[in-house]
Image (tube, rainbow, N blue to C red; front, side):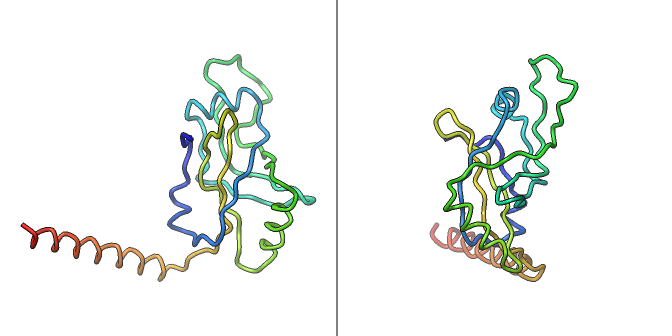
Length: 150
C-alpha cells in the first residue's frame, strides 16, 4: 500500500475525529500522473453537492509522457466514491458546526487509487502551541533519560 501523496499540514491544523476511505473518479492519464508523484493534496478540501462528495483544490499534473490535452484542467473537481451508508453518515456529521472533511493521503490498494479523508475539527492556535510545547518537553525528557543510562 504505497503512499503517493500526503497532506502533512492537515495533521497539524486539524484534530481527527473519524477516518474514511474513498475511491476517486480519474482518467487514465491522471492515474499515471499520480503514480509518478504528480499529485498535490495540500490545498484540497471536500464538499457535498446534491448528495455526492467532491474533492476540490487537488492538483494532479498532466502526465509527462502523454500527448498534450488542450482542455485538461489540473485543478478540476473530482468525484469521490464511497458506500451510500458512509456518504450519508459523513454528510450528517458535516452538517454539525465546526466539522469538516479533509483529504489526508492518496495511496494504492491493489491497482486502485484511494483517498484517506478525516472528519476533523480545526485546532485553535493555543492548541497548536501546546502540542509543540508538549513535544519539546518529551524530546528533552527522552534526551535526558538517554544520557543518564550511559
